[in-house]
Image 1 (cartoon, rainbow, N blue to C red):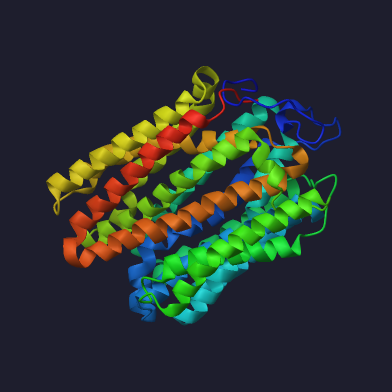
Image 2: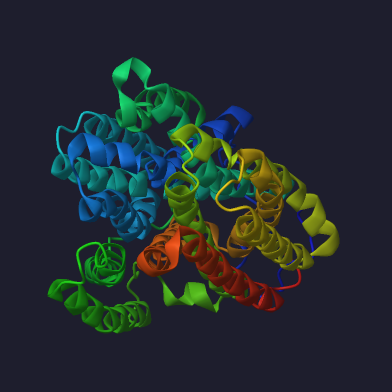
Amino acid sequence: MSETPLATAAPATPSTAPAAARPRPATAPLLTPLGLLTVLLGAALPLIDFFIVNVALPTIDRDLHAGPAMLEMVVAGYGVAYATLLVLGGRLGDMVGRRRLFLWGLATFGLTSLACGLAPDAWTLVAARVAQGAAAALLLPQVLATIQATTSGKRRAKAVSLYGGTAGVSSAVGQVLGGLLVSVDLAGSGWRAVFLVNVPIAAVAWLLAARTVPETRSPHPSRVDAPGTALLALSLISLLLPLTEGRAAGWPLWSWLLLAVFPFAAVAFVAVERRAERTGRTPLVPPSLFHIRSVRSGLTMIVPFSVGFGGFMFVVAVALQSGLHYGPLAAGVSLAPLCVAFFLASLAGPRLVHRFGRKVVIAGSLIQGVGLAILALTVHAGWPDIPVAALAPSMTVLGIGQGLVLPVLLRIVLSELPVAQAGVGGGVMITTQQSGLALGVATLGTLFLALLPSAGIRDAFLAALLTQLAIVAGTTLLGLRLPRTMR
């Protein structure tokens, strides 16, 4: 799948030649199948943990007497730290070695997961979740950067498709696994098991990575862009924190002040990065990345897709447990068809892209819309007596559509990315995706929770589904801007 219809490239210059178009040096390390499995396992951990707490929130509330605002901090603290530090994690991997940062990230993620699982009170849990998000930001960017630097041609296309499948399935698996662990109540651990399960998995992944993942780094490492890092962090925090926490806290003054800071911080960040690149320094996020058509068009579509997906997963977790009175296990199992369909569709994506090009993304988006419509009709007609099996058709269609969209979008963004910028490019892409997920929880979640008192759970759920359907319509139109061929 090295030459497929999906990304028209501008004429390559020495500094912007597509990574896939340039052969790797003969001495470049190769990523073995076991090494690929290991980095994908490392990628799954932070992605699963973004959502695994959703079905555990009611039991956390009962056990720690957390309250709504603190519960949202458990979710938001992880997401904000994660999204804020991802690009920096990618840059550090380029500088000091991606395998080294991957190992450090795995070890730190395991330790912070242990801290979450042993937290004696809500504030300790929030602090541990913030630290866990920071560890995830060290870990995840190294996965795509390692794939970019150690594979090429069809092997890279397959690896990126598997990464895309892992990214999407992990989000749903997080809630399935969370529901299972809370229901089983291993040794009386209750909700703590959703964090403690990471410890042995991280340990196994660390041992495998130490033996199977080759070391790579940028051939021209540069210093960390301190002003850019600070401004990017300020931009993301000033947007994500008030949106995710403001409603639960009653929209206090600090939330409005932070939102007011966001546009100024964002404009300052863009100005600083442009100036740094213009004067020959290396910015945290090189503006020239966005001159690459595949990066620009792919990221533009990833944003609304992630907003819709993140909001959907959060709203479904709440609606199934609070409205249909599913237990944690039933709420998780109801998403199993989505997981399976997503993964199978992501495996079929490479062959379909080879034949149909960007039409695969557009078709996937349309199929996702059909799945949302079927789910809305199911909820409207059957509420409040909807068995788990009745949700399977809509979840399956949703999984097929999403599995045809996300993996291909990730590959589009990476298709023309220079190898030297693999870390920062992967970090920018994952930051965009994770910020979109957090925005989805904040926006669709806030809409759903705000409508609950007046409209009831069913109508609030339907409103969220119809809002996501509108987002999917916009995403489908953006698919027409994708490049037609992919290298």
